[in-house]
Amino acid sequence: EAGVAQSPRYKIIEKRQSVAFWCNPISGHATLYWYQQILGQGPKLLIQFQNNGVVDDSQLPKDRFSAERLKGVDSTLKIQPAKLEDSAVYLCASSLNVYEQYFGPGTRLTVT
Amino acid sequence: DQQVKQNSPSLSVQEGRISILNCDYTNSMFDYFLWYKKYPAEGPTFLISISSIKDKNEDGRFTVFLNKSAKHLSLHIVPSQPGDSAVYFCAASATGTASKLTFGTGTRLQVTL
Image 1 (cartoon, chains in turn yellow, blue):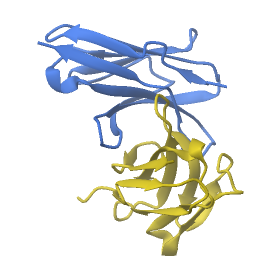
Image 2 (cartoon, helix red, strand yellow):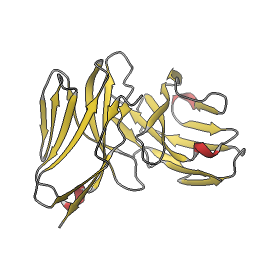
Image 3 (tube, one colour):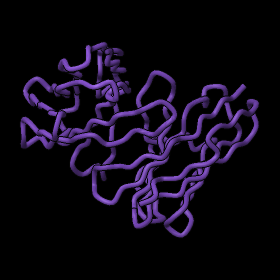
């Protein structure tokens, strides 16, 4: 069974630039999550999709972050414009049952 | 507001000995707890979980203990192996929150030879 795929793995941008991350969840997993993990902290949920509907985006900075899930499968997370404090690893996860989430390798974003 | 806390950022244990990783939580609504393991440059992987109706769950070398009155859980690894060296995250969820996980800050375990 293929795992959660994410791209790119690394990205370096300057502040005020835009960036987009892509995630392909495990086949059949209806729930998809985007997390932000800042160095030294645990993952923090940004947004959760159930199929292509948003379940929770309470911690998503909506003035600069946006996310969509195309046809209930792939998802993209965009930051526009980026700030220095957005430097983090962005993790995508998917799940079939309620609690066990499967994570991708993450995208390490550096904003200079 | 850190609802899930892992107060030990790092732990070093000799191979063959027991590793004990601790986690405290403040939200009394949490009723399901998970441990994830993370290797460098990889995403976290699920390790073991426990529901609040239990006080212990065991899976091979890994055992999780839950003390609800103290709002404390611990992960025991016996015996510890060098391959267990990783960052361990405790996570918690509450019924009705659509499987939203709140993670702790992680504990880096180093198993030495």
